Length: 348
Image 1 (cartoon, helix red, strand yellow):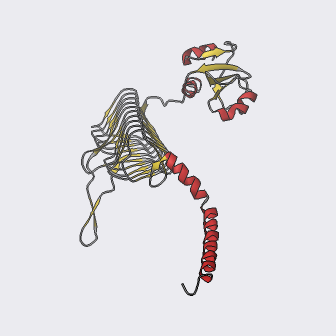
Image 2: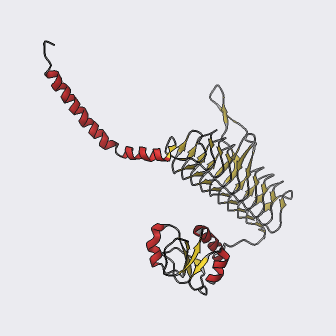
Image 3: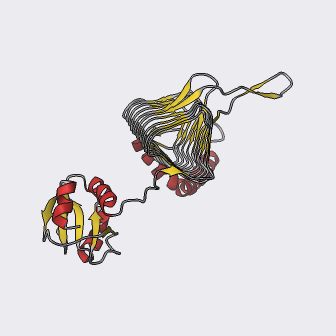
């Protein structure tokens, strides 16, 4: 594609020869002639200076490059759109693989691609232009919105509702039973039937091998535009707001609420029955046992303000040195006490 055409589609300013052609996107160090690269992080300034790419997407204030530059207000967003334009992913052709099993009581919309060994149960609805990759299972009465994409081995259990344009990556399970048991006087754990539902709103993505549990009553809900990474556990009755970001290995216990715009970095744990206010950000490996007010940046376990945690962490690194100094001080104090005791007046 000509750079001038790409710049027009991306809404970028162009510095350089618009007649140059680019065919794919590559990293700064790996790029060569015909490649489009991108520059966002200042740490890669040296790589920018030596890149062999034909053109680079960069921010308005980014340094000059030895090639053409597409100037963007949001360079990372422009990069994502350039990938879609230059290297679009293959879409399976609409149709039904002969090995798929679709109940006659299911409703399948137009232009749906149904791959090998897919199972769609009675009462299920699959919206138009959706893609079901091999070995996807759609349970009874589940509803899949339009233009969804469910990758291989995804399980959408009974009565789950997915909105439009939802993406579920390989091996994820939506609507599995929540972890609910009642223990009797004899110590026996009795399963509490999990008969609620899960609702996933529009434009949500759920990562590979993640799980979203159904509650015994009511619903588990994931708000529109939320993005969930791999290996995330969303327990029963959790309410997740709009545009929330959950990185890998996050665990959210039952009946907690994450308001709009919350960001949980990798391996964050959230206790049950608490609320994280709008815009809360938790850094990696934070443990959150209590509710957190809106706009907080928190770290550590138990979670505290990030600045306080940074100060505490700096002190912790010095603890061996401080322990040694304390031992030396104790010896000096003991010696001074012995000297003071030996010089006391016996008649006193």
